[in-house]
Image (cartoon, rainbow, N blue to C red; front, top):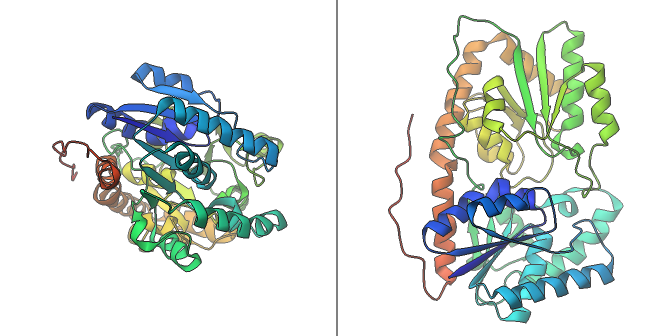
Length: 391
């Protein structure tokens, strides 16, 4: 049995899908990762996982170049002959579904984790692309022996309203999961008062609320509050809405926040923080940083928008909601947590409980394998499911 996972970056496959690949290996599956070249792909060899590269530029709109990408993908699938192809993101799902049809791959899973730039941006380019991408999705995602995996009910409703895929082929799996043993709370002495540390960890896109984060830092600094703002992540040149590197460096130099760049050891970084903030107005699937923060027992501050509300469901109970595109709203929420450390701890405890209940990666991986088994001629053998911690 061979299963191929195809995404638009090796970073995504390594950070979001390595655990799934390792679980498949434990069931006797040969796993192949496919993506454009990058700095993370070589790491798959350490786990005995093959990595194949494609000449793909996820921001390209050049028809000739895109035809070459599709041709390369067809060659790769013809060579590897996987029993199932799992595609991630809209572009990879469309190309993967087309290539699978052309090469006779017997089963396809198309995962769309959030609707992304084309469906969320109000810019002219995004509006022009939206009907074209929608039509391509309708023509490709639901064909043959396939399923579409979405991460939140809002996207399920959107797929249904736009008729992007038949409802009977859509499956809801909330998030890509988090290792709740690796991401876990750090014991802190409640009698020791230190500056509140607020972390935003994400691709540095304007729609992730990075600008509002920096502005909230400036507002609270002007009030004389001693709150530390940590920004983890790097600009994303493949996205038209990336925050320029010069802007991020300027915030860092001015002391508005501490920019940490790419961070490999996220659990250690979570141990330094008290709050995970994501004031996103991006059409998220379920944000990885929020579920990692929840598992780490951090208080969560985010918007009441698709994807984000999956993690913070009740304002004041399992986190705080802030208004999108509103730095003052974010600053007010953080000031509230700075003043009320008991609330800070309660929100962190409740976030951890929700992470264990809804986002443990063992549950998510098993649900993914259940979808595979709907399509495979020889379903993967059931294995005992490990128990989930409740503390």
